[in-house]
Length: 133
Image 1: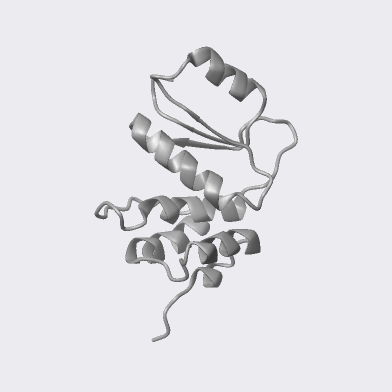
Image 2: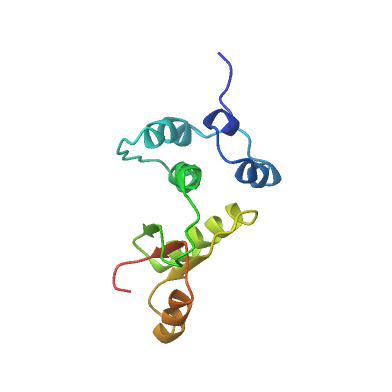
């Protein structure tokens, strides 16, 4: 059986280019099992070890279906349980969208809330945050 590649999911070329730059061509098992069902609109609960690609498993379908919005209001909101994950996921989203016009911000405690409000008020497309902020 032939191995699946990220191109088989019909992801945007600009996202595929970033994945190629990162030397990522084939999905991990959690990605292979998750991306298709997510793209078909199904809910997915994935459990896998740290470092197996869970973040890309949900981000890639989001980026495939995401549409640029001129209003400056977020069209994607990603909630994660910790500050550390806000930083990590925000960095991954920024990397994946470096060839796309997408404004990404992370909102979390421990940072000046007024600075974060200003960033938010300037507009964003993808907001990554944690409860409590």
